[in-house]
Length: 116
Length: 113
Image (cartoon, chains in turn cyan, purple):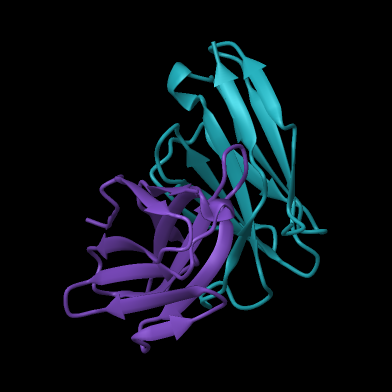
């Protein structure tokens, strides 16, 4: 176990709705990254938070947004859900260090989102 | 563009044999590479990593080889066990900037008794 936890485990929403996913990082980690993993594919980087600020973003539209809290936990929010948003959403936390450092990312179990 | 290419094969091996999983990457500026194992219904699990200033790194039953000349990465698993059955991903991080990982599509390893 990595110590990274995510909630909920599974979620079913309908198109157009909004969703919030949560992640608690491993103790001592101050960087959280979010990834989207479609079925049969590798994870795709959404964005990363370091010290409560977004410090990097992948090719995802603005309706994907996030937050990081003082305890380093994080939320991923998705507005106006589309069918293609159905995926496993993974968060990963990293060991302390500068945002440009090379550090290992440890993943949580993911949240399975189904959009109907 | 950036890509880490795993042409999603299924590698079938007999229990006790050695397994070799291959990965090609396209960004010559990448300086850090990681192998993850993902079992069904779980998040990716860190296996081993290697920096671009190294050619080889060994862990417990696993070895990662990096060939920067041809931008190729491989994961060798010795004495493969049924518990090794999973999808394996390689990921790369570009030099500098924030810690964004680029994953390939994965290779499924099936271990038969």
